[in-house]
Length: 104
Image 1 (cartoon, rainbow, N blue to C red):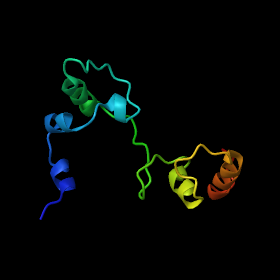
Image 2 (cartoon, rainbow, N blue to C red):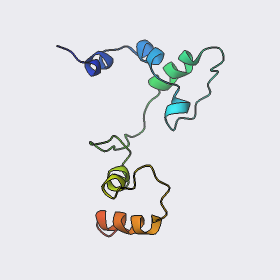
Image 3 (cartoon, one colour):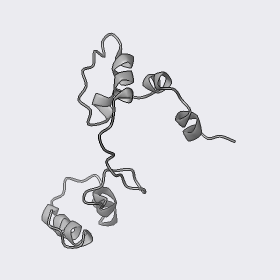
Image 4 (cartoon, rainbow, N blue to C red):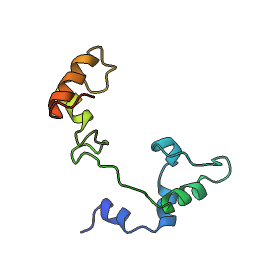
């Protein structure tokens, strides 16, 4: 039995363009979008763009990795998820320790 992920992976570019949210809203894309008339076309263009390199993501939460480490998962472990960190310096130190002493 297939799951929803399997169905999504089998979609054509055109089907995906109808399904996804505008890349300007949901990702760090900077594409020209005329959402007033037809956002589908800009989504299709974005889907078909060549990708220079793949940015590594966390296998647990899907967030982008910084120097191979996930800051989101580290914040969750510290109980700091979703906060504007008053303890940002402590977080940075923990992150540096987590990353093997690399200063961030």
